[in-house]
Image (cartoon, rainbow, N blue to C red):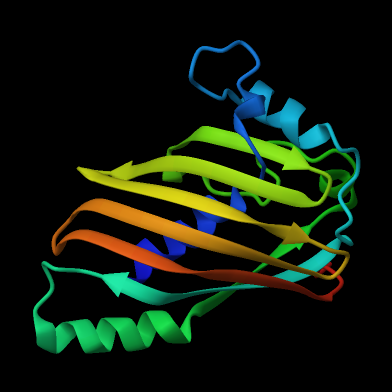
Length: 180
């Protein structure tokens, strides 16, 4: 389950947005080039470069395939959230691309919706990290110089415990300079 949560955080990390405007050629798919163009439309991001800490937590979890005695533990762990850190470079701030937050390629994600309007973002994406697992995420939020908050809805299919739906929040804050 921890890997599933990390994938959600990594998928979020991938990008940000506000409508389907990124699909410039109208083929129903948002390519890396289209994502980069959409992210760059607003110019530099308000976010300061440096070391960022991101906490993702879920306050609503539906997991009908999980035995009742394990659902409480799962909800407790997911409610506490998990934290990860990453470095945001000046180049990423000046020219944000589709990989703005640096999600790993192994997440195998594609965008269904991607739009950026200033420092507001909205994204809908699907990730296929392996096997039959499919993680569909919808996120929206706002970014400032040293903080950001995004709401997330995530539906996962193909897990050993069946389908899982979660709703939560992703909160980021700048914690200092990047390590040398």
